[in-house]
Length: 185
Image (cartoon, rainbow, N blue to C red):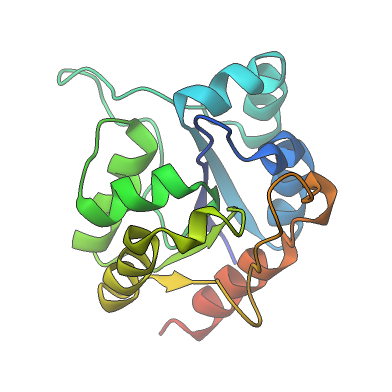
């Protein structure tokens, strides 16, 4: 299975600390047979600033957090599946509303239009999910064909301040991406 899996991370405001596990996640995705590209929100890029060279060495592709210039060639191969995780409250809502002011949100928004299978798993606390826009965003993205791993069998939110990055279930979106590619004609 030689497929491109842009592993994208959303972390803004309070952010999604599991993004700090990206070098390990990249290795697990590669062990599953994926050619991995890493896209980061600006906050994730700051958090992983010291890891960018390592991620580029591991993947053989540039880590991107900014849109390219119109005259630049796209340096990532065509994706067979996109894994967007950990997706913050802010990134989930921006994506569902089509607000592509950050590169990663643009990748996943365009992925819908290109019909690239996409797996997304939020990383939000129980207070954020009470906001009415979050439920609308989940519904919008699922109706657009995105496999959103939230609720039983996916990410289940913790009370604010009680979640631990090491408890983020990375195996769930990776397994879903593998299933998608293996079931493709």
